[in-house]
Amino acid sequence: MPRRVGIAAVLLLFGAALGWRAWFPSELADAEDAPRGVSLGPGVLYSTKLPDLQGHLQSLARWQGKIVVLNFWATWCEPCREEIPAFMRIQRTFAADGVVFIGIAVDTPDRVGAFVRSVGLDYPILLAENDGMELAGRAGDSAQALPFTAVVDRTGQVVRTRLGPYPAAALERSLRTLLAGR
Image (cartoon, rainbow, N blue to C red; front, top):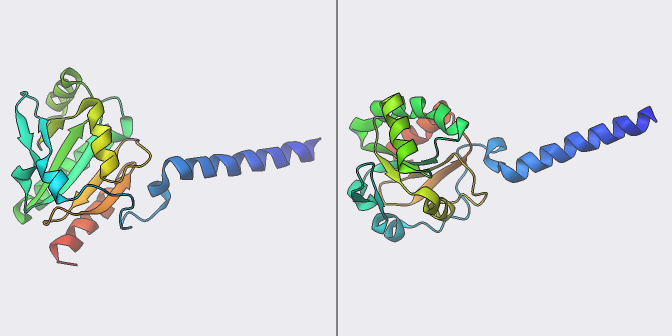
């Protein structure tokens, strides 16, 4: 009987690991991997218009020619909230080099506005509510989970993606590589 319990425990742990890998594949993959399943090219990206916190439509074409870090997030997503302070710091570090962070909130305007004010979020926030997950999917988020980050080069191509929290050091490395032209 104890042997069966031990085997069952091992199988359960193995199954849990496989399940985690299926839901959060980039957690186990190198953050530098090229994105898969991306159907968001420059034409779609730059024609996308989303409202800001004041309700004004903003075209992503506004940031054409820059390196853009698109971060899909929600106020109810703890890992999303945890990575935002690092994103603000990285945004300030690389802003002079033409890097811009854009938070795409998959949440309600009231909750997003309150959160932005409470943390002093200092990069552009656009509201996508539930439609944001379709855009995230086109950027490579096949799991339809948050947080999801896509790094877009100056030509409008998605060159890096990350499902789950994007470690600051890995993101900084990706940005330095893009800035160096590699």
